[in-house]
Amino acid sequence: MTLARPPKSRGFQSLRASDQKRLVRGEHWLMVRTFLRARDETHHAKWHILIVAGDGPAAEINAIREVMPSAWIVAVDRQPAAIEAAQQAGADEVILCDLAAWTTSGKAGYRVKRPPSVFAARKFDAINLDVCGTVNRATYDLLRMYRRCVTSRGVFMATFAVGRDVIEMYAVPRYESENLEERLIDAKIPEHLRARLKYLFRGSRLGELRSVMSYRGMHAPMCAVLLYAGPWRDNDLSFVRVDPHDFERVVVTPLNAERLYDCPRERIEALRRKYAALKAVRTRTPQVVSTPRSVKQSATPRLWDDESEPER
Image (cartoon, rainbow, N blue to C red; front, side):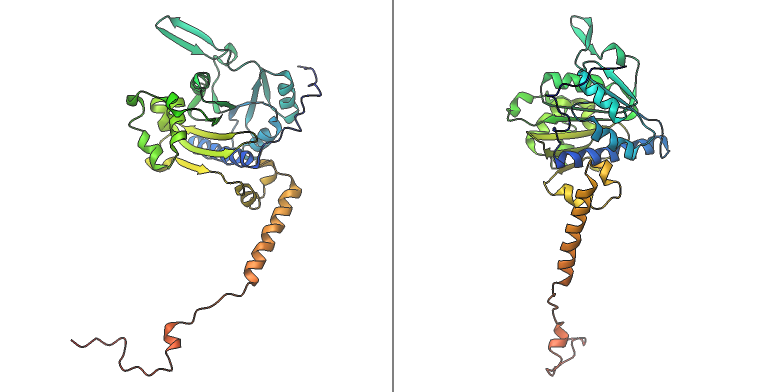
């Protein structure tokens, strides 16, 4: 399928993700591989993965290829330019459609929203909806609808913006989340994020949360979540607030950081030299060695033996 070239005003190379975004993306795809390996008891398989192409699909596709080389990557977007960029980046399949163009069926009292017909009979082992929108009713419907397109014990990921809206608007009937709210509190998730998570993932979906990462995007604070419908324990939910310098500390360690975290080789080498120099400085710094108490008092005659039993 041949598509028109993207207009010059839409420059994909100029739109860059923040370092924190790259770090969160790489860490979550590593978690996806861990869950799918445990489920299928194999190192690599032809796992079907659905992503939103967006303005820079190459970075995410490279990260998936790095950890899951046999995966079948399906990129979807409503913009032809984004679809062409996904094709050039190596996506196995592209779908030109609007994810929010769902259909509604059922009676007036019970309306069910379903995905577009192209997703009617398809299931994916992992889905990443990087919609980057604020938390509202449309985002809730979108995540709830495509969560049904995940296979049994599959992985579902989503990213949303944390705006300056009032958390009272996310009021959820208490019977839907009271049993699982303590799990969010034990993970030390802030109140403003807990309110949004309870709104987006109500009922049993809240118990599928495995990872919550908050970070600073290019234009707004963001939150990325990962859900896994496999066996879980109360301490399986992790919350991480990504700091600006976490990216530099992480990419200097793994050998595959260039593709996994979308970081140029030159920058990785520069960071490794930087941290090697800092380590050398700390190593050469003279350390003050404290003299043991017994050595200091060795010249002082003792009137009794410390190990002897005291008199009574």
